[in-house]
Length: 310
Image (cartoon, helix red, strand yellow):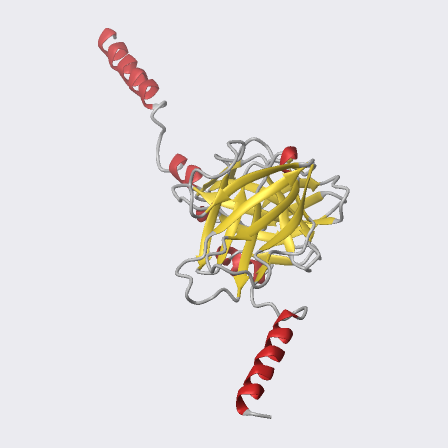
């Protein structure tokens, strides 16, 4: 066989192999579905493309969805005005790198349920693979309930015990689980501090600020009923003054094995005031209170007047 014929044969074989299933160069990926999310919360869908020609200067992405037979354009990286007005103020698409984006919808509505498609805009002039990927999204009712049985406010002395009771439950039909965390928002600080949390296996995990006290047995969180969670701080400190509340997060496991939050809510907030121990008793023993002084002065004046009369 001549060298020219050999080259032709090799080229033909490579072309045939390239056309076989699995031999395509471009693939677009989204998570396995269906994805379940609750009404009123957030949905995020990552999208990644592989194998796009390096000559493509910048990859453009588009998201669209199909709901009850209606196709809707949602958002595009190359055109900020692209998409249905029903989504305009609730959607965003963030670039993670040149080949990946994350699409997000906030304040989910029941009408957002449907089949979502991530499409890569082909700028290469020819097609060689899958330039889009689809995923089913199910929007379910938000049945998560969270509440606190604590008083509207608490006033404690340094060293007193603090016990708070919270409730968290859900009636979601799908198989889900809850995590519960108590937080302290200290007076004068911008960010809350996690006190301690319980995961789905009821394993406690203290926050950084409370780790030492938790290790010494001074902080506990226990599930004491089907939906009841009891927080106990054995001895409060002055830095514990602030607002305390409970947060519950409902999680669902997706087809890919990853856990995702579908709903989260906060309980009522309880202001906690912590005073220096014995401060009031010490001040009361140091002398007469201001309210007693006028009475003593009046008594002395009366004695002087009585002496003058006599």
